[in-house]
Image (cartoon, rainbow, N blue to C red; front, side):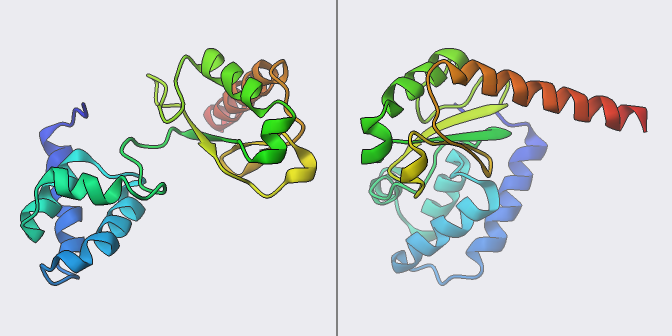
Amino acid sequence: MEEQSAAEVQQIKAAIAQILVQFEPDRSHLIPILQRVQEAFGYLPKLAISEIGAYLEMTDVQIYGVASFYNHFRYIPLGKHPIQMCMGTACHMVGGGLVLEALERALDVEVGGITEDKQFSLDRVACIGCCGLAPVMVIGEKIFPKMTSTKVDEVLVNLKMEEAEAAKAEADN
């Protein structure tokens, strides 16, 4: 369950109100409203679902029923470093599943989840479009080709080291 401070709740409500005023309170606008909310937050906060429901006179269950039909709606935020593991045919055939399992172990998070420190979120995607480089993992916008389960720890350690070096350089300035 999401836990937000009173200030965060007010901020979310204000942002949602700004989105809702752009639409007539008609159920036919549900999907565009959900898309705008996800653009604003990166996911669909539970509070947003309730606010949308009140505006459109729909229950939370009705809204989840529609939203859950579409793969692109998220119900948890992305991590600072969102990881996508391709599970398209090419990636799957050359070990994408093993890489995905290694990611779950290394991050201690299941697919669709986010690490406790909010640094990493993990998702599987149908195809990234780099079949010749399979299996492919993407962190943020950086593509990691020809991944193996043994490369997972190396990539994550390098990412953490790069981040630490950047933080140190920023602190030195």
